Image (cartoon, rainbow, N blue to C red; front, side, top):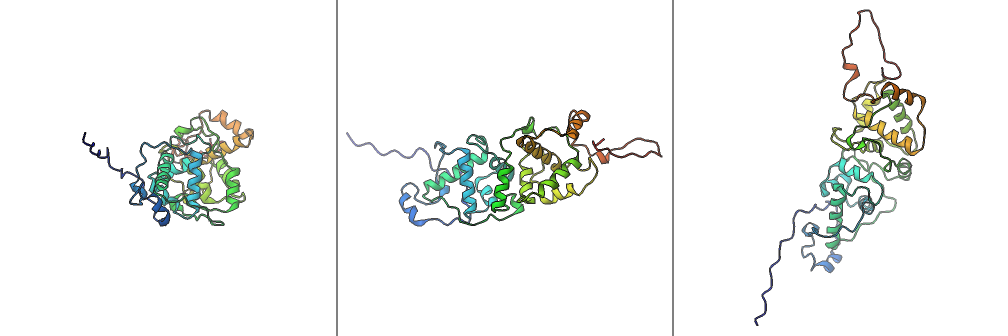
Length: 297
């Protein structure tokens, strides 16, 4: 019997893989040991489709943090490399728990990115002692790697608190804009809290396209610059900050104050965020005067 002819491959290697970060320096010596698995040495040529995902979300988050802090690439470059938006990236990174974030594109794409590098023979980067992550507002993240900021982040970790209607960005608000501005000012006075870091926390409170995008320092400053009880109610900062501080209140086990309880009575459905109170027409006699009370009425 004549020997059987060798069969051709069932399919070519997939090229639909996320690209490498531009600042990565490849380890040529290590690549030689994986030449047969990946002759080109390029992670983008590695097909991981069909492989079992062997890392949970927490492990991937740690790998991402180590990758960024090692200087392999910047946060924005990594987001582009795995093909996710800044909001999608932040939603995944702000969660905590081995099963939190399983459905996020950032989780799946980041796992593919690291698995391709592993198969290509590129050793994982290690943290550089004393190296800090630099701030880049246009990339929405990584404003500092200082110990103070890390400790503060841990203290304000609200990833395990979930509010009703949060996934639809419809949490009812029971604070006036003045109340929220007061809380923001107190929060920013805390040791280790930065404006850039707080803006990232605010952006992470949105889960739909209701927000126009990342909340920047200029947006925050505009909201803080207003003064009347309901002035700024249409700002994305108003909703996001309320949700953030409400989660923080629950996390710290604090009871609702008298003002909050009264707000729930006066605004049973929550205040408005899609109608600018100060642009409405109010019919009144010519000699009438009016002003807002402390409950935004």
